[in-house]
Image (cartoon, rainbow, N blue to C red):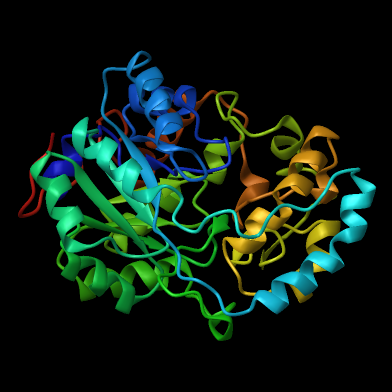
Length: 366
């Protein structure tokens, strides 16, 4: 597949598909135009909303780009725990003068409808989070000329991705901001994930398909490190969150380097799934009691998070961020891609020469 990825990018830089309005068409277009691979996040959108963003992105760039999908999630038996958590959040609702959301707001994220759109009108790449798609879906996307990538957080998950027939695996280290893409959400595994370099090295030795490294990467030297560990490319999220093209609220962008928020934690407070965020009041007060219930808790806290954002209250928002957040640079996205590529080439002793990923066996690019 590496040949397929090489046909999509000039630099080994993938912009993470940050859901919640961050990975907007303007950001993806700027990254792709600069030689990286821009991504739209279809998570939490309708199929029609996703398609409208694809059309808008196509009007901004003729370069390849990708779309990310969330896999449907199994039902939880802990309805009592969710109800108890809702009661605990009553004070938040009163403070923000709103109500908590309906925890039964849907579990499949419109997956089938979105997949149908992407098969009918293919894009260059599709990535998946929170599980492994059916082999039939991956095969159908391959026939449509789409490169497929699936997130994994362990060697076992990476092997499952390879068996299912994906072109590549995204090895996500525990440093990553936002949601961990674990295939099975087990509370007993909280905080046990591997650091990125250890994970990439092990995954690269365990599978034959190419590996894209994700988790806390903010500088070209770190890209060089994961390439040396066996990755084909690096996926960066928090680094692009701070750019002017990002759809993140300004209060979120400022918080990345604000001394008030010196660290991050993995928490279930906002969504019911482990996700890395800047440590704020909401996380400290509610994280210890949040149940393992995604997307129930996501739906439950959604109105609270929106109200906090509208009020500009960083202490009540889900401030997703990777461990490298203090290294954020508010550069335009295209300039950031070029800067990262220059830093990579400097480390590799290849200044002035563009990087192209090593080509490997199998796959075809659209």
